[in-house]
Image 1: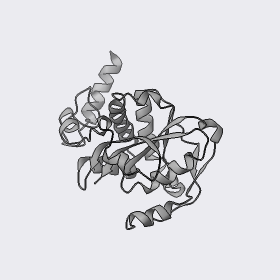
Image 2: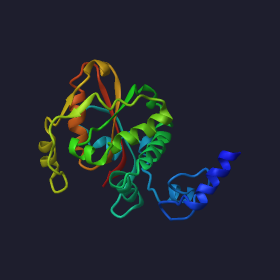
Image 3: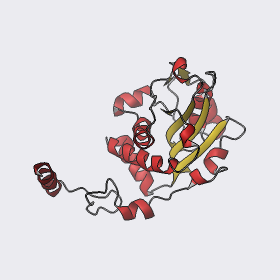
Image 4: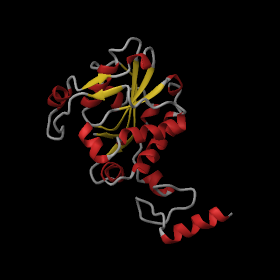
Length: 231
């Protein structure tokens, strides 16, 4: 009872506001109110569609078992705002929140049960040092809390800091990411079905390079998921 009173007083001094509409959140809500969660995050429903846009971006390039993204990523959209806060304003809680939302979607599929572990795409070492964390790892931890899967954040590393991908074509991005990753603990993932996770899928060059490195380990199979997918 005392704990609830203290928590209630804390909310009076520092009210919890929805990051979508700025209205006060209910006790059971987190980050977004129910209305913004349902209506202002454009979900893809790709987890119900086998040949979806995310999966098809790797077709003929990387043998991906399954591919899905939680929502469409659009300029000036709410998802872009959330990911910006996660990456640049120390809002690690947003990563956990988005990961849980993705986890709830994945839990509805029949293939998620075959996944052995989640592997977040490693961040550029300089960026991670500056930020203090890898946003994809925080998202993976949110998914993990729903699916009960281990997060293997140390089995793969960036061995080469790459140039910014922003102004590059797909071919240039693929070349830029070539040999950027290396496996640190191959024995830990031998024979496992890994869910490779990143925050946003654009051309897929980074995920592709990461997947190709993981697939050098005997018996590894890869599925891919992201929070956002850019059209």
